[in-house]
Image 1 (cartoon, rainbow, N blue to C red):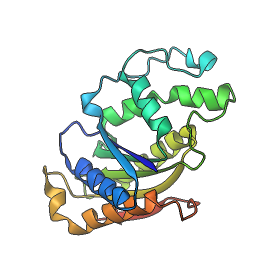
Image 2 (cartoon, rainbow, N blue to C red):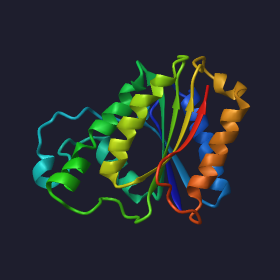
Image 3 (spheres, rainbow, N blue to C red):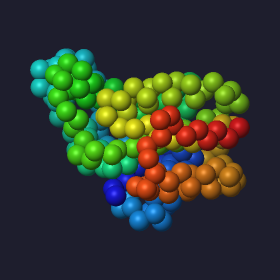
Image 4 (tube, one colour):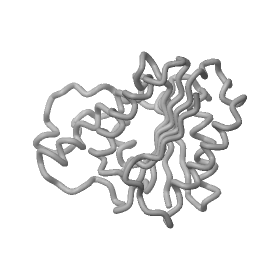
Length: 204
């Protein structure tokens, strides 16, 4: 079982990244082989909407996206972590998602099979926001559902935490850390069937 964690936060060791690492510890405790990648350390540009992927199913831009997509394709489980910026995913997260236009073209335009190598792929989302609003996670649900659909990956779980903004503040939220570990372990388990709808853990 390969579990890939993607931290999209521009802030090193931010709150969403700390939850991600805790979730990966949970996955590792379940016997998974885990890896964590920080997007801030990669060169991934935005989609330029050239539409060349409609002919090839591949993105023609030559940057770190190709390398990362190969990593994503080889993973059995994916944990995607983002802070909330203006009621949505941060810029780094959105650039990665938008580059998934090639995945959309492969599936819906070219009618090709999934780029992923595993037949049972599942994903979890971790999102942390400083606002008190519960609506700040609505955009995350919609965006990630569309992205995972193009990846042909089961959207298995969400861990959403609000009113957390200060660097390291999540460490003073023991329930959030415990839920991250639990959900990471459950995600890595191959015994359970994929859920029909994402498991929702919202901490307000």
